[in-house]
Length: 274
Image (cartoon, rainbow, N blue to C red; front, side, top):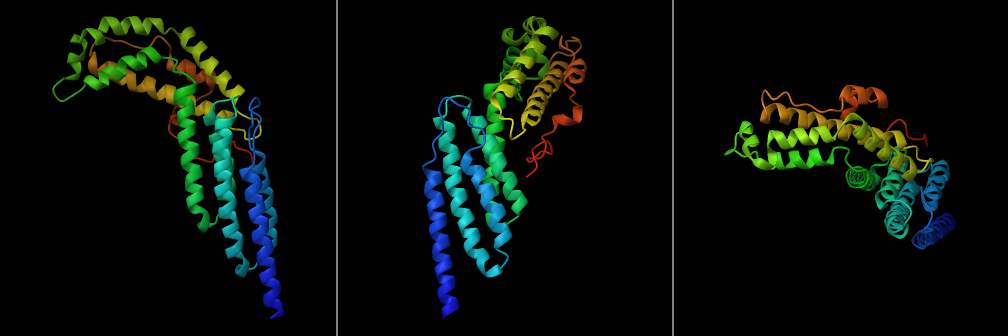
């Protein structure tokens, strides 16, 4: 009876502790004029996990501990979402994908099946916000060409053969030649350099995702070039149209291999170790 009373008291104290932590997380606010990086409550969750995993070796206490993890994670997700909206220094997507990346790596390290849904949430938030950042906030070095081929692809229906596309005045060979001439090597490289500078400015140093984001941005660009080159060959056969910017030269300059165009794993090796 004495043992049961002690355990009951310990559980009550633990529940109160978790409730207090949840309240603190929910009350977290960020400096609107300062890049927030990894939120303080996220770092505190790291510390709590490390201490708790060293203390709770008994299986009979794991149920309460993992229930506490879930409560803290639910509160953390809400805090990250609020912080992204409240701060005004960097794009919302950066706050989201950096913090969800950090939390997701911690959950991967923990390896608990009971937190698989939370890990999946981190995975989805990281990927979707990283993609939204690259597509929506960094700019397209060949935006006019991308718009042109978006129109070309929209016209490619069963009723329209690819080689007939050029008869459409909006997608004629003459229009395409002009666009290709506008995107000389120096112009495209300058645009890429500007976007890479944005990445360096927006991302925090502590999560070490600069190389990951830069490589994903470059991979997106090179995939588009490859796709549009194929469309030129199919829709304008024999025209010998090609990009003025040499892809091989750009790959060499940025140290980007062709196999890096494939989407990598979520938790990249270049991230900081836990």
